[in-house]
Length: 93
Image 1: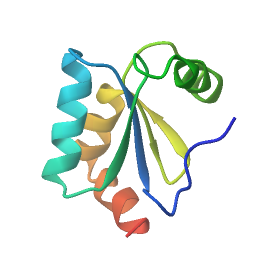
Image 2: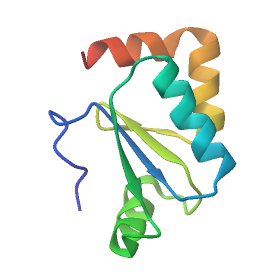
Image 3: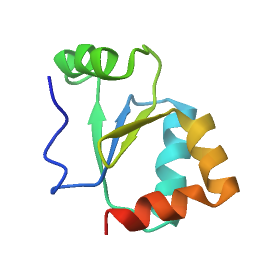
């Protein structure tokens, strides 16, 4: 299994509706003006298994930047607080 073509989007967010952490992650990325592909694992159950295979985790959100799994909202927020997120996002622009 593979992620969508990275040239289409540098950031991929596996999420589900009504998930507060998913909404927070997407809001943080939008505030950074980051283009991202959102994959709804409820409307695409096969993508849920792909997310588990790629990340080793069952919870959402699971976020990939430049093909690298960075984790969920907690990890995304920590990268933002440390200033590392801006560098990761800039690498893909």
